[in-house]
Amino acid sequence: MELETTISKSIRTGDDRANYDAACKQLLSEKIILAWIVKSCVEEFRDCDVRDIASRYIEGEPQVSEVPVAPDETNAATVIHGISTEDATQTEGTVTYDIRFLASLPSSNGKIRMILNVEGQNNFYPGYPIIKRGIYYCSRMISSQYGTEFVAANYSDIKKVASIWVCMHPPKGRENTITSYSITEKNLIGTVEEPVENYDLMTAVMICLGGPASRSEPDVLRLLDVLFSSETGADEKRHILQQDFDIPMTQTLERTVDVMCNFSQGVWDKAMEAGMEAGMEAGMKAGMEAGMEAGRKEGAAQTMLNSIKNLMETLGLTIEQAMSALKVPDADWPKYLELLANSN
Image 1 (cartoon, rainbow, N blue to C red):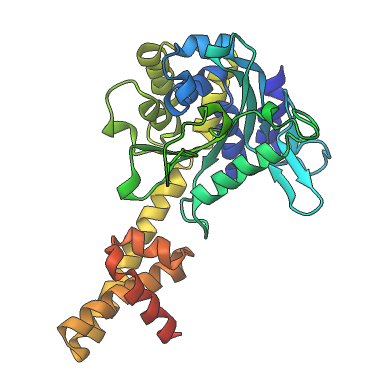
Image 2 (cartoon, helix red, strand yellow; image 1 turned 90 degrees about the vertical axis):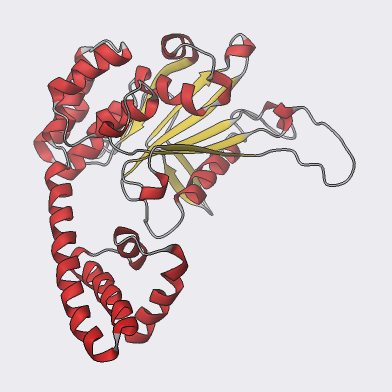
């Protein structure tokens, strides 16, 4: 069984985090799950039934790239089901996609295809804007078509690409949102109208989850929230998938849900929350002592700065992550960046 040779093998030899990540990728690569994502994020499929997208338009088997968790297996890093998840150039290095697949456009009777990439993202603040990475992935998926999808100057053969990012832990202001970024036409002088297909070649999409309890309607946000919830058990997940989303529980899908639940990050998340509360309490106490000497206004700033530093030291967060966790207003971020720089 294919699942046994990938996910189950990871379970036997890898750590919990690697196993959880591998199960997440496997779950996202299920055609019916991808169909819900594509219908909600790609305009060309908006009016299609999810079952049609899964059975008629997604071609072959989506290809999944996995972190090698069995060190004695040299070929464990990439399991290929269709087009490659790797783009490599001598000057730009190698990009490895979580999931990449082809889909034919409903309006083209199978004659025009798109290349799509889906990424699962736990850390919303990895040190750069996630959307820039999404746009970069789109660019690489276009440039990598040279020599395969088009040659010489046959640029009309370039396929449209889409990179879709599922963000599990977004900041409060972005929870329960889906945002698309694409190329549009804007007349600066005069009025012209270029055929859309000549420039609408890439779309980057950010799906930001917000927790299954926050949504009741069966949309893609609730579907993904349920799938990745650390508080929802495997039995409940299977029930919701079947009853609310009419998703048949195949043996592969059922086993993947079980695997992911077994290695859920729920324990890690709860430890993170407990650590943040302890860090905030310790930071506020230290800041209050300093604030009593320097005055109310200065003390408030020092209290917050100590809280920020405490989270950074105890939990290994970046200053941006710490300020977001403490809900520091955006307008105050420059002040604390300066205070932290001067305190070092």
